[in-house]
Image (tube, rainbow, N blue to C red; front, side, top):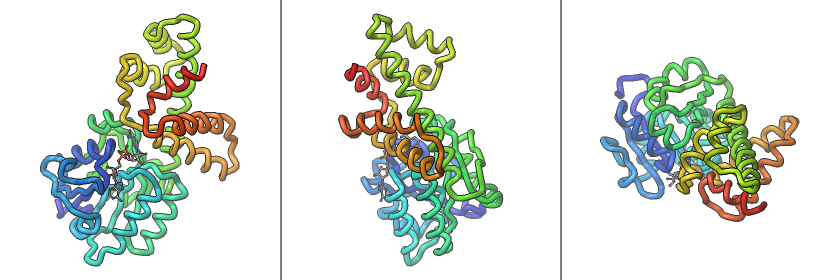
Length: 290
Ligand code: NAD
């Protein structure tokens, strides 16, 4: 694959989201991987294990990141920049870090002659495994063309949403704000219905045949809450981060954040009460407050 313009592909961060993405990328590219919590057990079949981020930076040309937040992405970018025998010329960041952090990291990388592009993703761990997650790429047209084979190996739903650093992040934040809001609103609605004596399964079936249908009613409630699995694979730590970043970014732009303020406060309370819980446990949290 090194003959292709994007060169050898690396992947850093093999967590809930990163691992299934890396598994798909490894099916089409010669992949080298690293995760700070231990790589061997997480490495996709056929991939090469790097023992450190620096070792990976000396082997790979185009490196994908799936890391918890902007602070960690900035640290890892710095490690890559400071690698003596560095080979990396492009970072594709699939993490959710917000537009401001993406712009800062892009600038720092550009100074070090590394191209940084944001390509956050949405669609959950199941979507990542199925190769159907939305990929929200922002970068120049020629960069998009160059890394498209890498993006295509992670999903069939790749979107070129903008050319400026951080536009992919803005798209991702607004999506997750809508998702967090529908999850919070559906939880309040279903808790109200159960209080009246309505059956959860009946409510979900009716919502899904009506105008109240959302991803909360189509997926989270029937597949992960009603059956007691609570297994969306996305923690309240990440959801609180994403809604908080949306609120911060929209407030800084002077936009109206009336709904975002209320939704962010709910996710903050849920996070404080049960740090690390799956996002779907917001339903029992909301219901217990009635
Ligand atoms: P996670 O915590 O499960 O995985 C993060 C991984 O990064 C961990 O395995 C961790 O060991 C590794 N890591 C942390 N610091 C590192 C470092 N310095 N060097 C190397 N590896 C390091 O998180 P996740 O759920 O996989 O999410 C990753 C990113 O994807 C986040 O930004 C999140 O917001 C975004 N995202 C997640 C989902 C989801 O459904 N989980 C969906 C869309 C987007």
